[in-house]
Length: 281
Image (cartoon, rainbow, N blue to C red; front, top):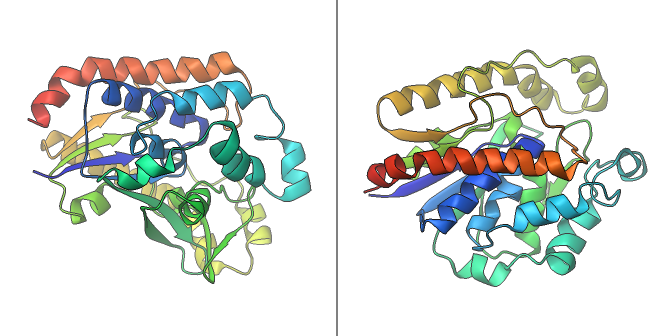
């Protein structure tokens, strides 16, 4: 049996995922492979570095800090989540990411980014836990319109959620036959059309394939939600998701709101521990 973990993104909805992951770590669950998209990558990497509580801690501490995320950062740098603070100061100095443990842990960890030239998903295996991996994780979480395109080895990348929001099929192709999927939307959620397509055409006019991917994202997302539900009903996937919409801002500044969503994740995971233990037995 090969055990897999899939983590959807969703900006600060990812605090729900953090709550789930901390309960999993407390109960000794391990995985052979994991894939995170956007916030699922930025927060999910902590399960490989065994840093329970880290994502909650730094999000509560810095959520109202303009160095973390702010309109002033967007206007001055082009990134609403400040790159220097989020991917240098924070993981390397202020609340250190344990890259040594990350590297030594045997679980394979992938993050998903979207190639803006092709509009297709790229899956990067993070294994060193250093600058290269941080750059790919940054690309995975770089939301279009409020983030600069990330250049890596001549490629151009943005948010992985545009091309593969819930990469269950990717994890199946990796040979995982027992897979936990953490979603950040309720089971009955249906995504609508992108509201800002005129702005997308203006700002990404050089990348027609990316424009198409963003235009059609709602179709891809809803199809993936249906596939996850189908595999869940077949017993091929175990899903933990919120019962109701999380209703948290993508740039939440209230630490009580951050903890609220985190605790919802913890509660959801705790309810599932007996069934999850049986599923992975």
